[in-house]
Image 1: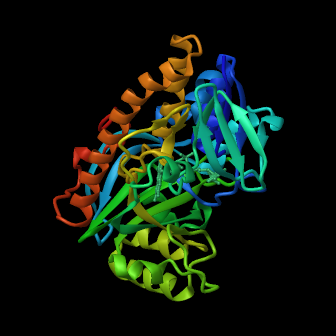
Image 2 (image 1 turned 90 degrees about the vertical axis):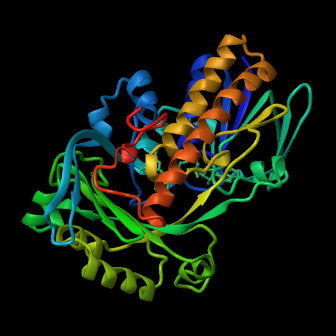
Amino acid sequence: MPTVAVVGGSLGGLTAALVLRDLGCDVTVYERSSATLQARGAGIAVLDETLRYPVERLGIPAGQISSSTEWIRFLERDGTIGHEQRHHYRFSSWNTIYRTLLDALDPERYVLGREMSTFASDVDGVSVRFADGDEIRADLLVCADGINSVSRQAMLPQVAPRYAGYVAWRGVLAEADLSAASFQALHDALTYQLLPDSHILVYPIPGLDGAVDEGRRLMNIVWYRNVPEDELPALLTDRTGRPRTVSLPPGAARDEVIAEMRDFAAEHLAPPIAEVVTGIPEPFVQAVFDIDVPRMVSGRACLLGDAAFAVRPHAAAGTAKAAEDGWVLARELQRTGGDVPAALAAWEVRQLALGSGLLARTREIGDSSQFTGEFHPGDQRLIFGLHGPGR
Ligand SMILES: Cc1cc2nc3c(=O)[nH]c(=O)nc-3n(C[C@H](O)[C@H](O)[C@H](O)COP(=O)(O)OP(=O)(O)OC[C@H]3O[C@@H](n4cnc5c(N)ncnc54)[C@H](O)[C@@H]3O)c2cc1C
């Protein structure tokens, strides 16, 4: 089996590294950050594909690393229930899944402080050059370097991220800090509120210590708000005056933008939801982008996860897609007996179809909720899924 260099050690890169290692490949992950990654407070809805490695290969019960809810509920402004339906979802946090995957990898195979600057593919292999000038060689390069991927920029310079016209405010509040009434309203559901040109989701995720029992979890929000493109730079300027292009991490948003967001929440959101939003100590914000690629392979290098397609979050399928890219790559390498070009050719056809289909679906959901007002409580398009609503 081939030697594999994985660039980017987040959920996509780690899953790919683990499934390829299990296949017998000689795999090393190179991560730009100099310390193990921290993404405080990012809750994620998790689909089966995201949990597949921990559940199938590590034997960890899904309920140990995710919280679950049994209802989808839409609240009106006054807090009454406008619509509810039974639906089982799982939620986790980026930290919980990251730690679980990282613990399964030999620490020597996860190299921190390694930023790839360029790569060059030839018939025999691929050379990867790092920012410190070092170079390594592998039979296959998996580029899992995320939404600002330098690999994609090198491979497809014509592809630019397209701003979707809105941002997501995110953050968490300890469930224990909620009033009894708000806890009761929110604890067993994925709760939505639809507003004109906006919508918000609230759901419980594991606590920072991984606790999944009620009362010890965190309540997580994702609130989509429209921001005209020319106002985005001001929003994404952090409290030190530094402009950012994609997101502001917890603690970086300026007081005045947080105050505006909290004031709007207090005035327009249902009381339990407003209580969560206004109570979040360190809300953070991410702009939503579409990235659409015509190719995912160049020679012996491939783009995986957000490095290829970055899709809007409405199907909650970003980490599932990244994981699926890794699983299918392992399957194709196995099928071809480790023939990298043959495996990549078959892989690319499938994963291009998956990525472009998901991007189209999430774009439609986002546009109808944020711009065209076609959204209604109980809209079945909203059901999360990688391959389609609920699938
Ligand atoms: C508002 C919002 C809500 C979301 N909600 C959900 C959800 O509920 N469920 C879900 O599944 N997904 C969700 N997502 C999507 C999800 O976060 C992404 O799809 C997922 O994190 C992509 O993983 P990745 O490993 O491909 O990339 P990333 O997580 O972006 O990781 C890229 C890694 O590469 C490293 N790197 C970058 N450049 C280099 C380099 N040159 N050399 C070495 N390393 C490098 C980075 O440091 C980073 O560790 C959401 C996204 C947003 C914006």
